[in-house]
Length: 80
Image 1 (cartoon, rainbow, N blue to C red):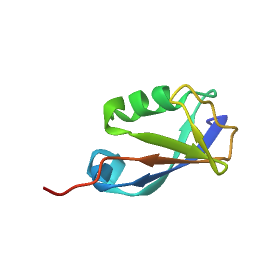
Image 2 (tube, one colour):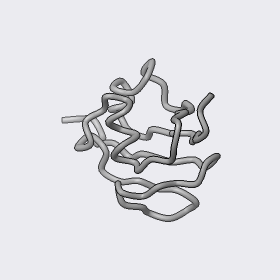
Image 3 (cartoon, rainbow, N blue to C red):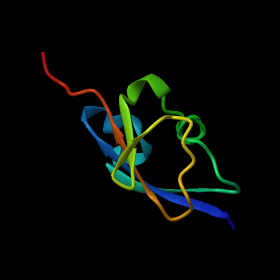
C-alpha cells in the first residue's frame, strides 16, 4: 500500500499525455516525491508542464507536496 498520495489536476491541451487522458487523477507512491519525480513516474516529459500550483501558490518542479494535497499542472495551450 502506498504511503504517499496526491491528486493531480492537468490544465491545458497536454492532458492527453497523462494517465487515461484524464484531467484529474490520484498518484500513489511509496514515499514523498517532487513534482519532477511524479512526472517521471507517470512517463510525462517535464517540459510539457509550464507551471505548477499547489495550495494557491506557484511552485517549482522540485516542490514536494504534503500527502493528500492537490497539485495543478499547467500545460501549453493549443492553437495555431
